Amino acid sequence: MSPGGPVPLLLVGLHGHGRSHLRSLLPLVKAGTVRLAGVCDRVAPAAGDDLEGHGPVPFFDDLPTALKRTGARITVLVTPIHTHLPLALTVLEHGSHVLLEKPTTATLAELDRLVEAVDAAGLACQIGFQSLGSAAVDAVRALVAEGAVGRVRGIGGSGAWVRTSAYYGRAPWAGRRRLDGHEVVDGAVTNPFAHATATALALTGEGAHAPSGIELDLYRAHPIESDDTSALRLRTAGGVTVVLAATLCAPAEAPPRLVVHGERGRIELEYTLDRVTVHRPGRAPLTTTHPRRNLVADLVDHLRHGTPLLVPPAATRGFMHVLEAVRTGPDPTPIGAEHQRVWEQDGVVHRTVHGIAGLVERAAESLSLFRELDVPWARTDLEAHT
Image (cartoon, rainbow, N blue to C red; front, side, top):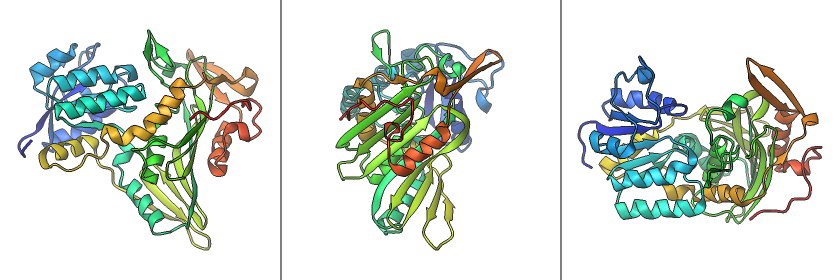
């Protein structure tokens, strides 16, 4: 694609997370980078909906029709996990480049099919791991490379968010491992905190490679199929240990963190805030905030100037091995009611796990799984899943 006017873009998935895409697209529309040529969803926007400032935009409830009538050169897919591959294939068949929300696909085999289809079509595909567009990732890698904190002992990650029964009731696929014969894998590790795994792997420079081993420690407090309170430990092919611990049953939300543990200090990355803090003995902490590249803008630059994509599908292979381990591993272990606080407010059920905010921090600091931290609800009879 040569330089020219705004690139016509179709947004598929108007509600839920699609609203945040509408908001992030607005500056690109105003700058003349893209033109929102249409929106597509099974459910039409409500009367008077200004689509987050975009105003009236052609609406379609059928993807092939939307692609033909809008002439979209870029299609943004913000749809349920199990629809990612089939819808991406439809988009590619109609000659449109695609930005596909994370997680990339519902299985590792589907990732292979997606990569093959993208290559065969000669089109571009960007995966919506927004944190990988942050210059903070390169900043941390540069600090590690220059030896700012000495030899790396490992990377720990922690996340504590709040999700209620309304979150799991918003769609039939929410919190499901499978639905109507389709793989879904909508758990804390694979969806809300997918960025933690993908970003940790990016810090090691091995996001495109399979880990040499993966251990899972997955639990659920909510009455769902998938995990909502999770820990995992992986070892990269290069020998870096990564432990991630996260929950959707926290008493309050906090920005998730990745911590590079070095022999002479630590580097913290708050990846939702693009903020890096370096801690070294005898020095005051040094915090810097970094710009983030919009992944649609990056895709447009790729099409116009041939610049490498920030997050092509192959760059997510390491994360997809983690998703595959979750998909094929044991069902999450229920956390007993005696270890929870449960209450209802305005018809919405809230759940917190006792002491969970501190526990995810302990796991990230010690590079330990829950079952290694003397937690009463954690199983000790699980084997590593690789």
